[in-house]
Length: 92
Image 1 (tube, rainbow, N blue to C red):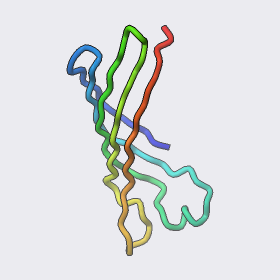
Image 2: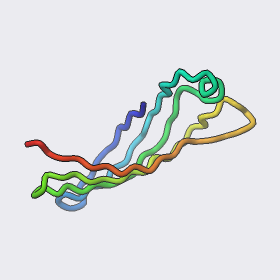
Image 3: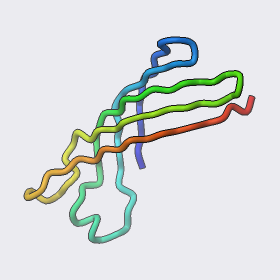
Image 4: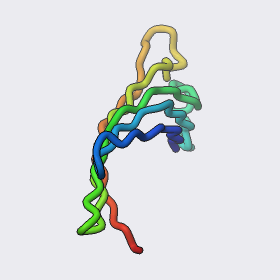
């Protein structure tokens, strides 16, 4: 599960940039995963979005870069990073 506390800034009408911290919590019951990874992750999210008001559509992209070491092992150091594409629809 990931929690994003992003700030959004509208560059133009409908076009926005966003960024902020991201906190992640492992929700796995796999014993192997639990043994090699920590239960908490911290990162930074950067992205943008566009609102097509005439069609009631939301389009967005976001890149989340992991800052904290997610490994419990001292031998390996890894961070989680993701690229996301999103879409939505207004129901007003």
